Image (cartoon, rainbow, N blue to C red; front, side):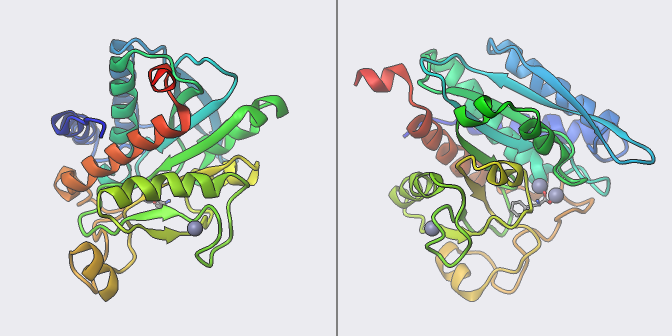
Length: 297
Ligand code: PHE
Ligand code: ZN
Ligand code: ZN
Ligand code: ZN
């Protein structure tokens, strides 16, 4: 099992909490809180040897919001691209530490651990920290829109990480193959679902399926036919009796009662859940992206 350092995840969340605290309590697009969050992510990536870049875009007609996402790549030994994405923006109502400081911390930590490992993966792994999600998934939409056909075809998978430390968590994996009664993702998405399920199963977690319901940054990738998947531990939905039996926690209560509110602070995140989701993401990244070390084995 890959090793994830829990204290590093805490450090990332503290940086996002500080970014909100110093900037009026949120980290929404085009605010000081977003800029401070971005600066932290960029500094961490640079220190690990990556060369992060900002991809600028704007949205909204009357008063366009000037926003940006951050992208950083590993090297690769093939032409494929595997994107790991988490939105970096929060809503204006709160600091957005579970939604989505948690997903950013997970993706960032996988980037840092892979850099430490030092081997060149088979696929180019692109770490994406999206702006504009809360206003309508504009950053990921722009990213997919500006790809050439050839670049789109080179994308082997998109893994979405939005809300992975919910305080009353259930463990959801996107239903790539549609076998769970939801609409299937693009061809290849079933294999991604299985990779996540197998890793969680080995840890004794029987993940539940969640549909691609146009509710997060996977949407543009799914519509472009790029195989997609990801992890999610629940938002404002209510935990069922069956889910509480499977995962523990409180039936009849929300997965995250601070969803999109001022109380989505660092205290709202279940760190053990975030650690397990980060390890699962790490395992899936190595499984789908490969490293030369793995290939040599
Ligand atoms: N898109 C929602 C938000 O950012 C949360 C969500 C994530 C919903 C993943 C469904 C699946 O607020
Ligand atoms: Zn949100
Ligand atoms: Zn979100
Ligand atoms: Zn399925």
